[in-house]
Image (cartoon, rainbow, N blue to C red):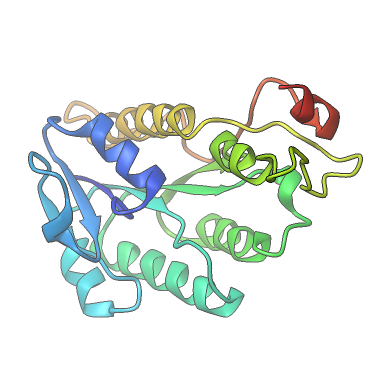
Length: 215
């Protein structure tokens, strides 16, 4: 089976929608009853080890959506619990949605880099998708105020933002190709072409405050 976690979130929900209807795809969510019809679901709660043990049973490929915002130690504990449980369950390959390398200065970068190291040191195959800033988030942050001013403190910084839909398309394609490779009956143990790869998924052009204001 191929599991996508975090389908109750923005990115996970879009990815799940793209994979709905495919055989062997299941959703992981803290609230499986809220998963859209047509997609089998299991309860996955990173704070509940029992849910991970039961939820990952029989899963061959795991698309691990990062656990969202929180204190660094909380997010690290959640990701660590998920990877530990996946290894014990026999998951063959984990695809992880991380943060672009250009975001190392951001306050929430540490849990992403910790998780990347944990995967490299682990027993499963792995692929890392380093996602850029959502263009939807940039648009919301840069929206003019009541007086038509953009107050987002970009300074001289530049961002290569990317849409959530584009990131979902990339993740869905990678995880399906991984799943097909690691489960190929004619060649058990086949390595996916994505194994051990880190992909920087950002927009085609970095823009700054002036370009945002001109849009």
